[in-house]
Length: 351
Image (cartoon, rainbow, N blue to C red):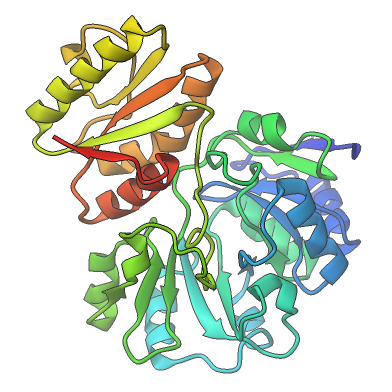
């Protein structure tokens, strides 16, 4: 067990002295969790191999799963990458700081433990004021996956971080709820046609408006590949899983509701506690189960923001089976569905 320090920071009135303490821990090779605009991150000095090892130990994370390096200034990019393609400059000008990670060819100072042994590195500049200032004060690039136990739903509240990592990290910076709720989009810009390796807070449509054609890695839509060498976090392993089994139902919305009701009755007849992940438009149409709405289907930003929080709420209610509605895979819906599919371990019923 590690003695974990709690550092409370108001993002609207940041106490720099308190945050400097967290920065000193990072600089000394310790681990610090902190809020970003997407989810909470678990950070360590990206250039300190022993510090980075502590991230994998704290999370129980597979060592071939690459980490994202977080920076606070555009200039920090130069020492971490071999080159900055023109496409990257356009995207950076539009979306940084923000929920977008770019994959570059790495420089020699980036250790292999960060990249899973690959010659590429994933980098982003967070927009959250606490994250940005913390990295700036630490004066080191910060490797930071989500601040949860590996495989569990990503943390969007400080309570989630405490539940998973208290006693496993040196400090937890408590800074309120995160906004976007799903992790950053990961875009590989090392090839002629940029490719999305993980959908997230910046959509394919938004990227194409700036740089033209963008492809989506087929692995996003398929099952995880046993021998895949992941270029981005979230490509190979099942993620975001609550304790309950998750079943997704896809099809017309009325058919989904009917299908969920049928499965709910069957599961409850067999003694299971059933949770239903619904939306504002459908939550009153279910006759049983514990129903929690993600928000309105007309506001996918709210749905994304609530997704991991609701998965953890079902855990707190000791649910055995979660039956979940699905969403159209366009815009932010692609990121929402990517997380739901992984939470369900690719268990999708077409109705």
